[in-house]
Each structure stands twice: as structure tokens, then as C-alpha cells.
Figure 1: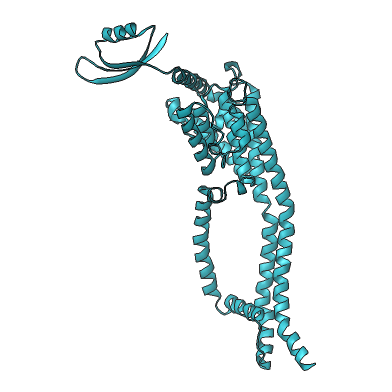
Figure 2: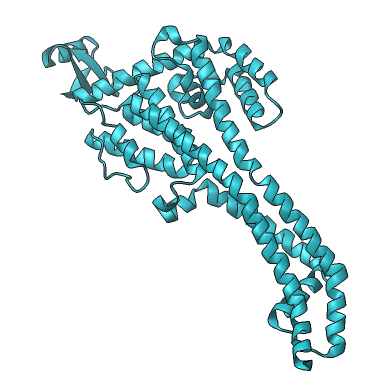
Length: 391
């Protein structure tokens, strides 16, 4: 049985395009004639395209099977929310449960594949239909969600202690500016000393923080209003990755994105999704503009060449991931290797967060010590110069 694509005119003169299955070309034309269609063009379809469409249909069927049974997951999601403390993880699962209850999911499966919630639900599908709805996939999925959110929470928590130290040091410096630095300035003015640049800088900063406090606060507020959107734009567009490439590939945020990408890719391939479609949705699952573009680029080239080009996006996607996409003896992707890579990226991200959590307080203490030391030394520099001249 062959698959044909055709263009034909119906009885009222409308042009129609479509596909049909027939044993040979003559039978295909006969089928169209039985439908009162006049053939304009007809050609046999590429076998790879037909197989890809069958894969996509199978995948959509599995996903549709999950959506029909989504009500069965809601009690488990609600129970998970009850056990979690108030925070981002609990809010995200609550939003997921609310979305599952909405009529949005009654739309065709092909329209839902761009929805973030669907991507989160993909790991719930097992490798067989009888696994859908069983406790094991749900347990693994919740464990994965909790691990990712725990890692993100650790990334936020690592800044609490350094921020507290910086806040205390700022309070100390403000106290210096109001009570201690004016005494030194008055003393040096009485002696008519020529102030060295570090001391003049400290006195200028003290004056801005005391005499011109409203103007200084307003300037800082304006700078913050400009800086925060710029940082958000920088991160949302992954400009660090786009400018520095592989140099920043080992950052914890990139490792978390790669872990989500490879894990979703492995799950989708195990569900029978075509590699091109799996790459597109896995890129979206990474929540990284940089890696999503690279995955789409790779998917587009696979449509054209039907083989993985190791040079493609090698400056973006890791070589191990590109190798996993054709690691099987028949040139097919290795789902097992992709799962192993996802675990590896997740473990590397956790280790990096642990290392940064250890180093950040040390760096903060050293920075605060240098800042306070600079202020103290700057205040005493004119006094030391005066004593030296008298000696």
C-alpha cells in the first residue's frame, strides 16, 4: 500500500489538496474519480514522511488518551499541594491542577502541544497505554517536579545570607556617613589638609547620603527601575549565552535547562513522537530562549536532511546530546542515553548550586571587609600624612 498526495478539482470547480492510500497509481486515480474529482497532479509520497506522520498520529493518540483521563490525576495533585509548604512549587502545581480542570483541554491535541502545561504532563505518559493512570509515572513525575523546584529554591536561598551581610554592612556605612565621617571632615577642614583621592571620594559619598539624601534615593530608584527590566530582558533572551556561547554553558541555569530539555526529549521519543516534533517541544520545555532556538534549528535541518548533523548547533547544544540523537546501531536516538544525560545535567546543576551556596558567603564577607577597610583607611590617610610631616 502506497501513500499519494494529490491536487484535484471537484464538481463545482474548487481546488482540493489531500492524501490517500492505494496499491498503485491507477487505483489512486480511480478512487479520486469515484469522488467526482478531476486530478490535476498526483505523486507518491516519501516513505520517511509517511512514517513520520504515523509516529505523530500515534503520539497524539497517546497524549489524547492522557487528557481523557486527566481527572484521575487531580486528587493526587491536590494531595501533593496539601503536603507542600507555601512557596513557588505549591503554587505551580495548584495552577497546573486548575488548568487541568478548565475546558481548554477539550481542544484538539495538536493545538495543545504549544501549551506549557501539556509539556509538564508528558512524563505522566508511560511507554504503554496500560501505564497511563498508574501510580508509578505520577510518582516519578512529581519527584522530578519537586527536584527541579528544590534546585531553583536553593538558587534563590543561596543569596539570602550574602544579601543579609550586604544589608548590615550598608547600615553600618550609613551610620558612618551620619555620625563618624562628618567628625573627620570637620577636623581635616580645621587643619586645612589636602585630601587624597580615596578620602575625598568617601567624603563625597557621605555628603550624597546625608545632605542630598532625597536626590540620592530618587536617583537609585530610577536606576533600579531601569536596571530590573534590563536584567529581565537579558535573562529572557539568554543574551549571556548568545554573546559568550560555550563559555557560560556550565552555569546552573543552563544545566537546569538542559536537564529539562533532555528529559522531555527522552519521554517524547519513548511515546513514539517523531524526532523533529520531540525537539521542538523539548526546546520549549527547557524554558530557555537560547536552547529553544537551537532545538528548533536542529529540528528544521532534520526535516531537510533526515539525519543528525553533528556540526549543527554544536556551539550551542552539547556534543553528547547530538551523539545521543543517533547513538543506536540503526542511527536512531538512544532514549536510555538521553535519560542518563538528563540525570547527569541535573546532578551537575545541584553540585554547582551547592558549591555556590558555600562560596557566596565567603565572597560576601571578603567584599564587605574590603569595603569597610577602604572607608577606614581612607579616613585615616590624611591623619597619617599629617603625623608623618610633623615627624
